[in-house]
Amino acid sequence: MKTLSLLVALVMSSGLCFAQDAVGYDEFAQLSMEERIQVFNEIDLENRAAIVREQAQRWLARNRARLSEEQVALYGEMLDFIEPAKYDGLSPEEERAAIDLTESFLTLFSLEDYRDAFTNEAPYIPPIADEEDPD
Image (cartoon, rainbow, N blue to C red; front, side):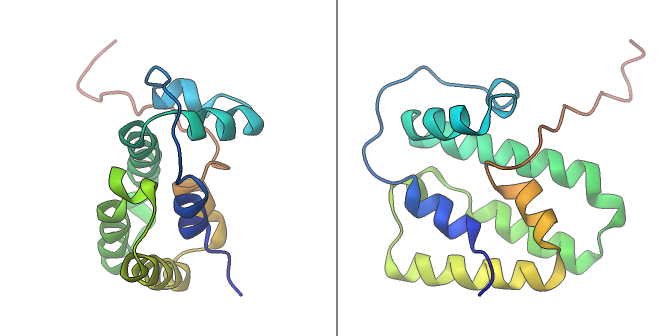
């Protein structure tokens, strides 16, 4: 069976969330895997979604030129699925939607693309420099 990291990440991260200051993507993504897991489980739901969304948006910005219109559209659906409330647990309907969406994604993208765009195992993606900024 295909790896369903999105579903696993959403389900595994549900539960009690201990108070911790917000962590930015750049700081989070440069932590070790063990530290990422610990921090992800301690930050609030909004911060979790913000980190995942930032990784996904940076991945898309770096890879858009090689993607088809169909891939970009499906990627947009994946981005839309990233909501803070989903990190507090999924309803049966949301769980089914997560599985379906992930399976669709894996028909158009590689497992490596999925990992690099949407999981805590993703490599750090630095911000893309503003092309209008000469500095």
